[in-house]
Length: 407
Image (cartoon, rainbow, N blue to C red; front, side, top):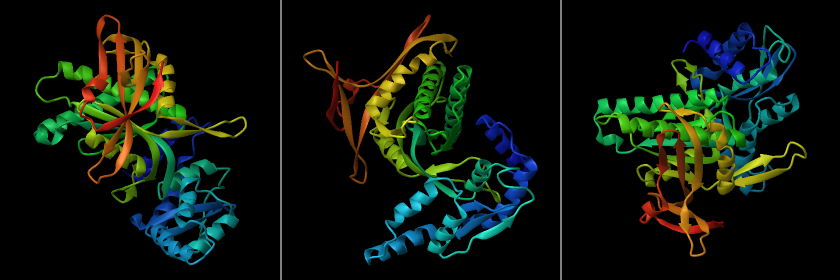
């Protein structure tokens, strides 16, 4: 993508995020020109920066210096150096905003053994181009750590067994279901800012916004994708529509921008714990199954700034309470009357219902916990859609333990 066209896309994204005044494209382009040179075609990352009148000071380091710093100081820490945990130090730098004070910039630069680079600009940072916008542009030439983000994974069952023509048709079908689900959410004024990257036989999809309500929106987005796919399957001939299995999890990941030609891409890519967990879960998922990871999402109280956590079961309860926002949407021409989302278990003799937490063992012998999810969609004048598998379908699905009893 040409950098001039990138600025147009960037401004569109800023408007989508609700900025009051779109950034000046000439200022954006001028900043990007300088940053692109410092980036060195991907050799360097722009770690942190500070504002300085008609310019900025920025710490530019080779991309490999991050790991070398952490490893070398890990040894120093073992010898009694008071730096603190080196990996956590690095994570604290890349998990927050790129903008720091001039004093902190010099301290960080000294730790890494580099001198900040001074950049003169044809505009005043903070006045002609907001600090937030500058931070967003610099992130394209850096890496970031997002500590809690929801990600969904869709996987086409038996994908490698189909011909290349069938494979591309199935991926096209899945992409259409994703776009259709997004369009339906927009109809309900739910503007999920989703991003996706292919796995070869499916997609990772995440919400660029990372709050608890944004995670719930992504969960519903996953439901609509699966529903559109299920309807398409009933109408398809040959192997044109994939049979899907899906996983949903919340966790940390690194975010970066790969090179496209000689510039970073417009949208980010993710890699880290959350994608690893999803990949291991999907290996064990059965055709048509929906697996949900065992996670805890922090929620900050804006009133007193305290932090509480929501676990998977509480998250699903929160999602169920929010499902009414999808009522009235049309699936295959029929409006949704009601929906029910739940984690499966079995009835006890006293008629109570328990939720089962499954233990999944991957090919490396490592274990992780997951829940089996179901979604029932009831439509006016049409047969209901039952997505996911019942607990009775999972007799041979690893071993499990009862997580919680509910009335």
